[in-house]
Image (cartoon, rainbow, N blue to C red):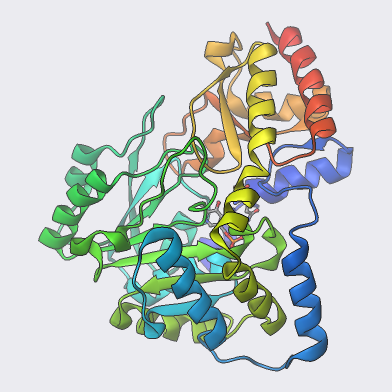
Length: 384
Ligand code: PMP
Ligand code: GLN
């Protein structure tokens, strides 16, 4: 058995959704909307299944999808991407695996920022790379630039960032990217930026990609996911955008990870990306009510909700809510005693876990949120 794989547990998202399936609890844990998904894309996928080829599409993705990705980023983020700078992958998860296997060698160091998406460190370790962790601090979870600078060594080859950030919802600013650019240029480091939540931004905030920063344009890799842009998490269509030499080597990794991604879904995602900007704005707004509702009701129930302007999640500060148990215990008891599944922040740490916060997903119908909040209200009272 592979030693790094054999020692792994099961990802928290599968564990918690498994508990929801087993117990019938309301699932505010794993990030997915209950809604079926935009009909425009479902119809386009059905049409493509019937009318287009169901055989292997080109390895780096359908040319029509690559063109749609370039055009979407030109319209939404002002980026200028060439065809050879785009590789379509089977979800952002495969994109991450392709970046890490394509860009790192055994013994190379990669700086990871905690709390972090749980795939990063295991993927790095799988290729023999060495993760160096720095941590964000509440309540604003900004990048700790000094700690980041101090974590750089002569062996650092990659900084892997996530903006908008899961689970905190914090976002990296253009100024912060400029500071990072100086570090990356000085030490010849590649910046991989997981931007899967780029479209799910609220309160008038704007997502910034490192590809928009001239000093980072040739040394950054942007990862995107149709699952998040279109609320179709099961589709697993993602992509990598990077300067051609980086995209070429990431494409070589991709060829032996999955080689390609189902063509009908690629056609549908291309159609979806080409929908007018107003359609995309309305789609994001379709999640805004659930977000406001969850925030208001959590507050009404006595939970201290931290500020966050992006993703499908809000998080609660347990001690500030008068709750003295750690996050994992809260989540475990919340399933069994309240019938509501949530995600403990400590699952987003590889070392020195923070145990004061719990993540809640708001992309659920009103009635589901109302029922969950009633249960969580009673549960909080039982804890204090
Ligand atoms: N990165 C982050 C930060 C995520 O939250 C997720 C999943 N929600 C992924 C990557 C994986 O995305 P995908 O489902 O497209 O593989
Ligand atoms: N990214 C999703 C979340 O944060 C889960 C993805 C998964 O389950 N692999 O909830």
